[in-house]
Length: 75
Image (cartoon, rainbow, N blue to C red; front, top):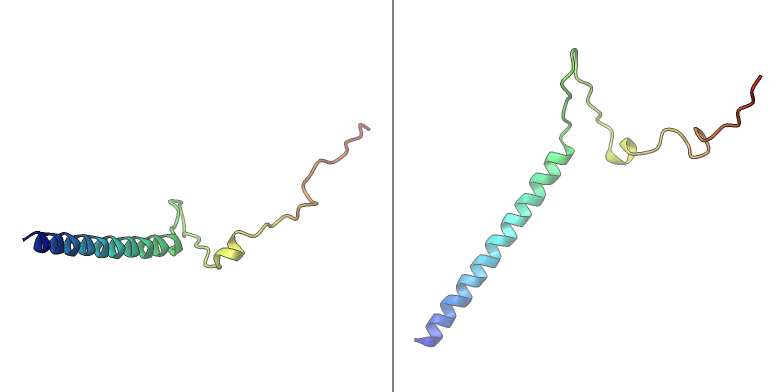
């Protein structure tokens, strides 16, 4: 009887682990799809959607040596 209950406990724990793995995998996929789906903004007129890959979207437009402090001389 004890062996049977131990077997049922191990079976239940294995099933629970399998369910958790499946749920986490599905959540990861949903998060990835949600992150990659462009969301239009609420503005008047047509929505502008950026379809560039994330690497290109996140690159700097202004180089590091531009836009910094400039010496000012009074005329």
